[in-house]
Image (cartoon, rainbow, N blue to C red):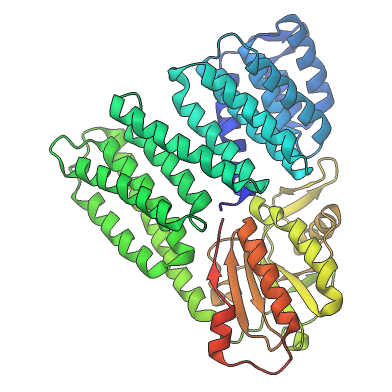
Length: 497
C-alpha cells in the first residue's frame, strides 16, 4: 500500500497549486482594510490569527466568493501543523459549504477534494477513522450528484475513500468500492464518456492498494489495460495521449517492481524506453518537452531499480561501520559497540514528510523493545536547516553552521518527542551509497551480529508491520550467527510506499 503520508502530501501540493492559480488573479479588495497582497504577506509571515480575522470578516460579507473560499483553504493548509484545531474547523466549514452548494463548479470540486483529503487525514491521525470515512463519503456523494461533468474528480474521491477504508482495516469495503470504480470506467470507456487515461488512473490506484492481497486480480487488470494501450499505440491512429497513458501505467508498475522484482522492472523499463524511442516525432512543442521529461523520469526509475538490486545483495552481509561527524540525543557509539543488540538504521531528513510519518512507529518500537536490546539510530547529515521557534518547525537557512544544525536537530527531536538519537554522517560522505540509499525513509535492520537482515524503503503500513515482525524475531534469536540461508529466509528488501 502506498504511504499514507506520501499520499497526503501529494494532496497538499494539489490543493495549493489549485489555490495559487486563483489567488494570483488581479488583486481586489478582500475587506475594507486588507487587499490580496496584504493577506499573502500575513500568510508568508505566519501571522495566522490576523489573516484568519480579516478573511473571516470578508467571508461574512461575501460568503460565496470562490476567491475567498480558495484563500480559506490555503489558510487551513498552512496552519495544519501550528494550529490543527483551527485548521480542522476551517476544513470542516469549507466541506460543508461545497457539499451543500446547489451547483458545484470544476474549481469548487477540486477544492472540495483537497479539503476532504486533508481533513480526513487529520481525523485519521487522531484515531477518528469513522468520522474521516463519513467526511469522504459525503464529499463523494456531492460530486457524484453533480453529474458526468465531474467524472474525473469522482474517481479521485473514490480513490481517497478507498485509501481511508484500507487504513481503517475495512479492506473488503475498499475492494468493493474500487471494483465498482473500475467497472464504471470500463463501461464509460465503451460508451465514450470516459477515456483510457481514466482507466489507467483507477488501475494504478487498484494496483497500489491490492497488489499484495489480490495479486492475480491486479495482474489481470494491468494486463487488460496494457493490451488496450498497446493496440492503440500500434494502430495508425495512435496519439500522444495514448503514449502518455501507457507511460503512466508502466511507470506505476515500475515503482512497484523497484521493491518487489527489480530484475523484471529493468526489463519493463527497457521495453518502455523502446516505445519512447520509436514513437513518431511529436508535432507540438509541449509534447516534445513532455517526451523529454518522460525520458528523464525513466532514467531516474532505472537508477532506483539498480539501487534496489544492490539492496537485495546487501541482505545477509555485514553492515559497514559509519563515520560519525556528530551525535544528537545519544552517547557516542559505533556499530561495533552495539554488537549483541538489534539495530535499526533509519535514514531520514528533516524536510522529508514520509520520514516524519514513520515517527509514531519509531516511538512505539523504542518504548516496546529498547529494554529488550533494540536500538534505533536516526541517520542523517547537515541539510542547511535552522529551527524556527515561532513556527515550531525546521526551516531552510543560508550559511547554516554545523552547530546551528545540531541545535535545530535537538529542537526537532524534542518537538516530535522522539526517544532515539541521531547520527550525523559527513555531508557528501559515502555511507548512504554503501547501503544503497536512493530514497528516504530507508530502514536497515541489523541482527545482533551486525548483519543486514532487512531493508525497507518508504513509510507505508506494510513496511511498518514487516519491520516490527522482524524486530521481534531478531530479538528472540540467540547471539550465535545464523547461516546465510536462514538470513535470506527472514530478511527481505522492499517497500509498500
